[in-house]
Length: 316
Image 1 (cartoon, rainbow, N blue to C red):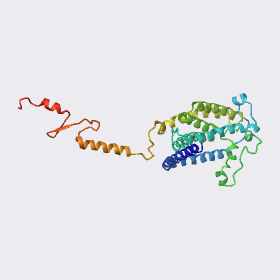
Image 2 (image 1 turned 60 degrees about the vertical axis):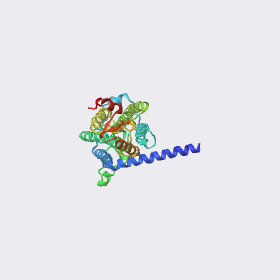
Image 3 (image 1 turned 90 degrees about the vertical axis):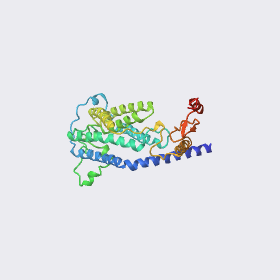
Image 4 (image 1 turned 45 degrees about the horizontal axis):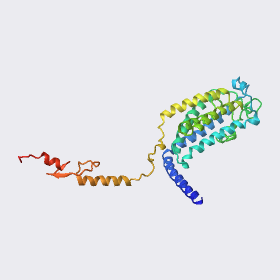
């Protein structure tokens, strides 16, 4: 038992080392794209922080979802955040599974370049939308009478740039249309829908996305329109951006990775054998044809008997 565990542990370690070597090569090539995507996540948070200074509390707008779904209240508002955190962490862990499991379908670095492209495109549209019109926030801390409904004037630029993460994100107001939680959730689910392999997990992921949509409305973090707009906007963004991006190389086809050093010993041996055959049989001989040939008057003939049969009978 100990020998088996040690052997499997050694295989796992070699697999992790080889995968890390490949991914580091890709990271050295794509680090600018990844860095740009991460920087924009900060810019998106900065924009959400900025609109909070412009937010003006007011009466909650009439909303169909508010009529149909009872409010969870401040005590149960954590339910939607817990489900979102579970989806977020699960997706991140899944993107790194090629480091451990043998069933590799994608490269982690290339997948995250794709995911960040979807997120950035969706978030640009979101920033444009919620800066165009500021709606009164429906959440309990954004309503009239709450001290957090409008941020006081900042004392310094540094106070704005720090965005008070994560409290500033959780207790933000004004960045409503459309839901940022649904942007991340739908991008993750659509990515797994394309590159994941477990059908049951795909179905569960879509079901949890629908549940999260209802929980967001029930916790009054967003209006129903924020969730509805997110559903069709993110799907359209992913559809069109995905067509513009180069397709990921499929690692399940069994072809060797172009980044891994190839074993060319067999190729060299095959080439040497082919050259030897050409030297024996002549340069014009196909290496796949190993029939014995006889040389007559400097010419290669297929069959010796055929030569005598074609010779003149009378010697003329």
